[in-house]
Length: 176
Image (cartoon, rainbow, N blue to C red):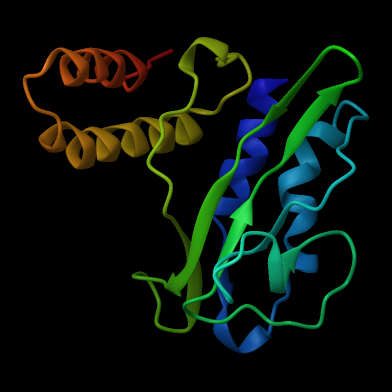
């Protein structure tokens, strides 16, 4: 189930959308849920919410939810991306990233989501039978970016060496 949640998270993150279409989070919600819906599963919360408008955590005006919201996504907004799966009285899985709505580098008429989160995905939980080569390349590129950002911040202290070992292990390139 971790892989299904991750694919929903990454599918949403990879969206590009026209600036003049005035899309709200309502239009993106099913993108994150699709992999769970394929096996008749879902989660009961919204997929995302605004972040930092008044320096609070759960706030609008923007959100990603199956409930309609009239607030169109605009450049500079931050929204969370947090699909999940929960098995009652057993465990839960939620992958939560913060996304910045930014101009697409590919086309000036489009927005994209830029992932602001710099935490590796749990590669031990990947079901490689379910991840496409394209998505695996995307994950590997994300993990490489994390190493470039985080590794220079680590020093030679015992704690930082432990953190570096963890970083290298969790961001190791994954192949089929």
